[in-house]
Image 1 (spheres, rainbow, N blue to C red):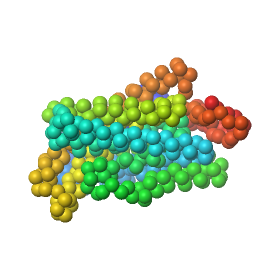
Image 2 (tube, rainbow, N blue to C red):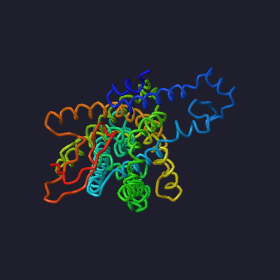
Image 3 (tube, rainbow, N blue to C red):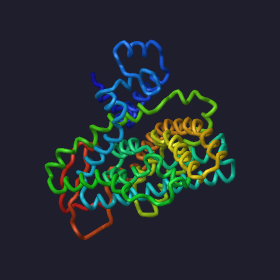
Length: 387
């Protein structure tokens, strides 16, 4: 059977197919069908924390790989990518990461505050709260970005993930809402940069290590994509009370963050815009942000920094915000690959190739790793320059 060949005929198939497969199985799990749960119970599967039996939560290696592995696999992916970089590409990667992270955060924050000022900040446009907007728009899907830049971008695009990963989770949202102050802990930068930095160091010190880790740039993608999908519930699309708000949130996230990211790339003379399009998404783990906000609000209430009525409102809108963010995550997971494929074709017609590294002209020769054949093989090149 030509399973791999068939999957690769689908644009972004190595990422999209496992992602949708994981989402489909998780959706079936969340239906809690009695005959499936009875089979799992007979087999001795453990109950979830909510007292159900689920196919993706049977414990052991299976659950660790298919349900809970996304972050560790993405970290390993970044490590492998770093081992294929030299210092010149590494510098570009850090620059792109800073541009993407800052535009993602500030555009999401601006839209959230603006709509909150124009409409009601709790139940504003189509029921969107400021919490839902900031949580969704400032938190991008790292796995989606990694997969798309691997297929259509260059190494410095992929390496930008080491900085972009800072916005994973509720930290920036909580800072924006003023729950934990405005000081960003330095350790947060160190923790996301270490895998890339160590991989880059080892790959440059020993070419054999670089060669050994090279397959990790592609082989890990379907695994972390499946795990990301295993956190999505397709049934949210049938909840029409939150569907309009979720789709609006998805469009705001995709359009606003893509435009600001592209503008920043053009301002700093980057030719390819694959990376800004790839990060114009909502992360699947952003659905946990409203719960984190409620927990932080509870602490603020206990400390006297929040009134009881404000806490009650936050607690009330959290479930709606969670559903809206989930819809945004699924919708942008569909929009981003389509947009990246279209932009890639447009750029190629203009003579710009997303997989190619573009540097300013220099009289000095430099060592680089050149990408060929869909990132599967590489060759070393001395004294070659690219515009």
